[in-house]
Image 1 (cartoon, helix red, strand yellow):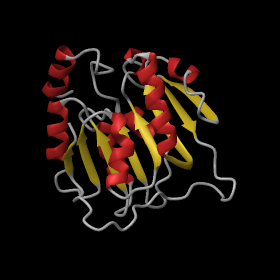
Image 2 (cartoon, helix red, strand yellow):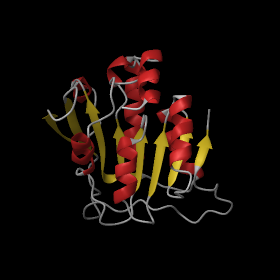
Image 3 (spheres, one colour):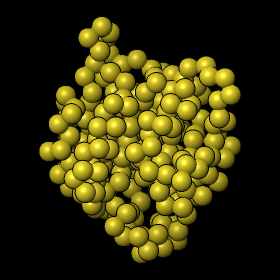
Length: 212
């Protein structure tokens, strides 16, 4: 665990889900829920130090995109430094609720996967439901919303999704529920389609961005 992570936990304990970052085993287990066999668009809510982000970036193809939404300014700056040389990674210092806007301004129709480690249990019910709606609508048909949480209470609120599977993963401190919510596949297609960016004139350079 880095000094930065520990300091941020002490300063903002209700915004950081755990006192220590995810274990290597949890990171690998979460990444195994994603198919990296073709270019993907992936968003992550609350990446913190970027332990999951690094594994995703390591596995994804050169044509993929990873959007990181981090509210904490110190973590956001650290992520910008960490991924400064990777044009596939967009660091957004802002709320995860801005996902639709960030996708639109990059000419991206939707995400294949959205990953979240933010503590949904502390969010007010209206904000929780609004974020779930935006998350569902931002996914491609057949896309997945993957969360890792200390509790499994979010499952009762995620009724927008057509399918959900959970597992209790013990190889982490604390143990975590990993839940995969899936948006229904398209009636006119088979399986997941890669949500690749369209060609947009004057597209903002991929890299560190600030929306707050």
